[in-house]
Length: 209
Image (cartoon, rainbow, N blue to C red):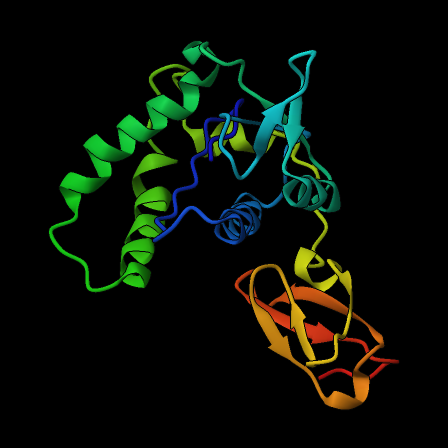
């Protein structure tokens, strides 16, 4: 993620491209930057854009759109087949490839790799003189005027209603989770929890299970 004005850079390595992973990266980027921009610009990635309507307008991934609304930023997409609209991020990827990776001789885990990336951001990437702005990103960042984001994690408010079937196995979204048989026939809420990669069943008349 790159801030458009200051060119402050946030880098995180992941093992997959799942929506939960993307939202978790956004959460940690917002914490790193100390705020959020009014809008975010995206490539036509399936975790954000699921298609377009007859007028050519984007059809957003509903869950990601809800995540963005929860944290108070608008989502925009790059125009298809116009690579210039994503030049900042493409240049950032090239910079990471040419500057960060040559400094890393080895790493022991994904956690260790991301620790090294954080040190690199703080001591190299965001304190260098940027080739376009001719200033340090960390200096321009002070004038970025970022918005306060909702510090309540999205997964704590995201809920979907499900009716408990006769086998007491609730489906969400493609998995099945068992609940006590006494709740068969009742409505329950499901929500994502624990940093975007676990799912819980909650709220049977105020009872958390």
